[in-house]
Image 1 (cartoon, helix red, strand yellow):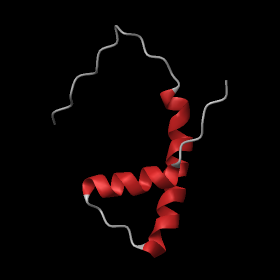
Image 2: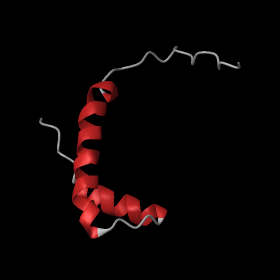
Image 3: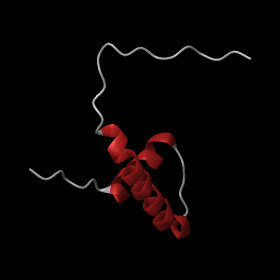
Length: 62
């Protein structure tokens, strides 16, 4: 079964509303394009299955 494509415009609108971030109409289209690009970049990383036994690395303290 093919994965459904998210309604990015709605995601942007609802997320902006949820955090109280106004997006000017002249920027909205570019925000949507950038969100779509971010999803495209993140998709392969989200598809990687991680072992339940993995632990985070130590925190670097200079």
